[in-house]
Length: 305
Length: 327
Image 1 (cartoon, rainbow over the protein chains, first blue to last red):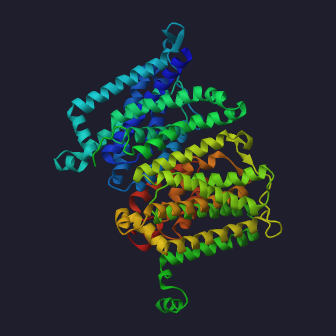
Image 2 (image 1 turned 90 degrees about the vertical axis):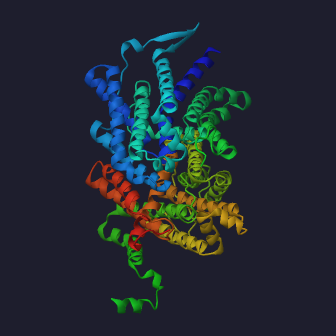
């Protein structure tokens, strides 16, 4: 039972990381209609920036803040230089162009930081375990990730639902032509949204850096998960991204944790051992395939076009 | 020049006598002469490189059938390379070494897989179709990783190439090269016959406006599914060739970035043109190879180059030569 709670927490933590990534991705896709494969590269840059700045300043927090700012700036610069010409083009051009950006960033990171990854170590205060329920100790840092990500989600909610910028974002996700026709500086809005998405991605990258990895190509694996999340949740919908990322995080983690045992109860040990890893990796893709067949627009579709 | 063209026009269709045609002819001639070059210079690496180019060009041709002509952007096409390759690998591992069994099985299983994927995916459109094909490819990738008996993540070394009991010995690299070349030309011919038939017209019409095609009474889903299966089967053949070429198969061939590579080759060469994917495959792979000799950081050049192609070169290289956007 305690193990189940622990795995649930792990699932929520993965879900929250995915949400940070997926929120930016779904915003960019919903508002600018841009398939941004390079989002994973922004995630990678966030982690690398954090590792470098933390090293330079000696403080994890300061490094994180600087990395966040740097990610946002990098994102906005990328938007102005490389992304702008792609607006309005068909998705295939987006795929080709942003695929090229992935190659470029992987190589750039290799040039600047070398082929071996970096490490980002936590301050010693974080390296403790807290007792959540009697008998269950959970790493403090993972709890921090969950709480901080929830705070960011709340902040995002306030910005999107209660500010003028948020109103423009929601309007753009519903009907971007109308927003432009109403005299809003669409170019600036797009740059800001892209910067916001980049900041969120970089934030996800730097948050998971101490526990997972900082290496070239780290964005590619999680990018697919993020796309699965936004497809399940509904493109352009942050609420959908939130719910879907929790679902995906929980299914993936719980699947990997409990599916082998479940299978062993039903099948022979050998068959279970062979099938289990494959099935648990496949579980979220099967979910996405099911959603696409049953309800293609996602769980909480944003746009009505 | 004009007189020469008029003279040639009596033997060759006029539509071939333009810059695109010349480039294509030159490229095909060059490809045909690679073994001669290898014999002359002793550079056997060139043979290996160009065999790979031919095999991936065949895969690109199959992708172009559904993507360029059919408008079905499959982001999981590399899965068929893996399915075909693993069919050969698994059969070899289980003692079946005859190419007469391995290759048809590879094609058949790829076709079956394409049937399942297509039946589910073709209910969706646009970016959802892209995502679902991606998902299916990832699923196969993970399944292959879990196949411990056949190498799992490390891959499976295939000790012997397929044997055709005396008909052709593909252990001879030159013979194998020409076999791949012949199969590539066969694949292009197959696509050209398909596309210029009534079937192909329905497919292309479905790409433009599916509702209109349905209103005209065509069961577009079935047509597109058949097209999808043919493309999958053709790519499965390419997978079987690849497994023989490298004597090795691993899940990595199915990772989504490899599907991205295939898409790049098709788009680069020009969507919806017969030899476009071949041009794209040759260009992309040779560029990759040439750059890796010049610099250690080839991605710094290829990446922005792809971006520039996406922004400025509408219609890919073929489109550039034809002068403007081809739709």
